[in-house]
Length: 151
Image (cartoon, rainbow, N blue to C red):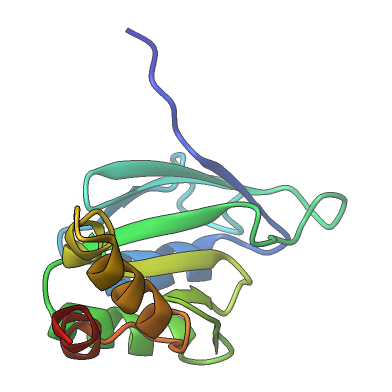
């Protein structure tokens, strides 16, 4: 069966991005394509069971936009807070509705799994209350989303 792996183009030696991403997610691993000395031009990392391929391809196509993001589903506010802090540190930037950019400009969505339950509720008034609350947030807050839903 074929597999699909996101392929990310960077304009930098991959040693630092590989170390950065694998330090954020518990159990992450990397394969730097066999490089032991000098710059790393390609690498594969695995984050939470998802493989990502990285390429130091130079400036021609470098740069990320929000048209592609990595979606991270979490269970707790502590996980949201931890990932948000780590991914926005050292040049990253928060955005709206659970989105952020990391220091390389890669977009991430840090989303509590309960969001699907709240938004998918058959009670469309309550679901809309949760949606309206989310639209006021940068980093998502589970308690605030639940309180809006429960109003």
